[in-house]
Image (cartoon, rainbow, N blue to C red; front, side, top):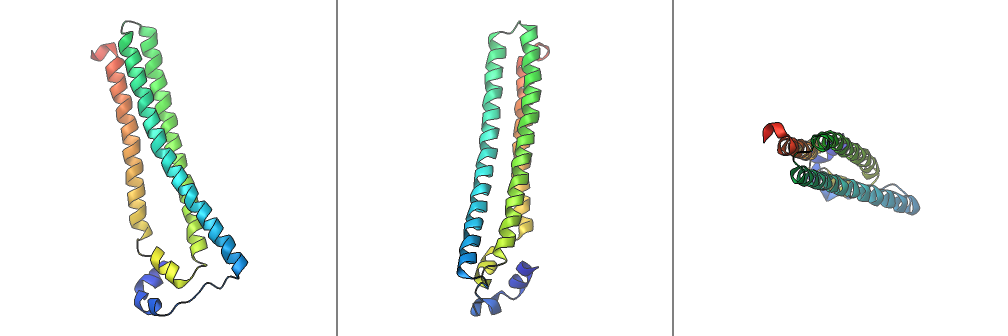
Amino acid sequence: MVAQEIHDHGDELARENTPSELDELTHAEMCMLYRESADAIRFAKAYQWKSLGATLLVFAGMMALGLLVPGNTALTNLIIAMSFLSSSAAIYMLVLYQVWQNTEREKLRDIAGHFSNFSQFTRAIKSSREANVHRYTLLVFMVAAILLGNVMLVLTVSPLYR
């Protein structure tokens, strides 16, 4: 609501600075909390990508193992079962990191509401709807990469597909 008001009346608000109504100590505390939330978002996003990469590396290792011992049915079945378990765990972690980021973004929105109108105007430049589309598109691509990696693994090690 504040973001929409700022966006609609941006030129008027940009001319007159309305500083934060917080005292200096509270403002410093809010800045620290803002920084911590922003760092947590960066951390969670980095670990989303690292989880994706690690999962695909594990799949590559399982593919190599399956190709090195092609006649071992028990090992092949174990590799396939482990791939499904790994996929499920990795997708769960990706979603968990996404939820954590959303929680931190809510904190950022709340904290930013206590800052000056210049700060609020700058944050309102990119709509939250557009940002959500970008975030969830990346999440879908990450999940698709894991699923595709799992399918490739199963097709590579399964004797039915060789």
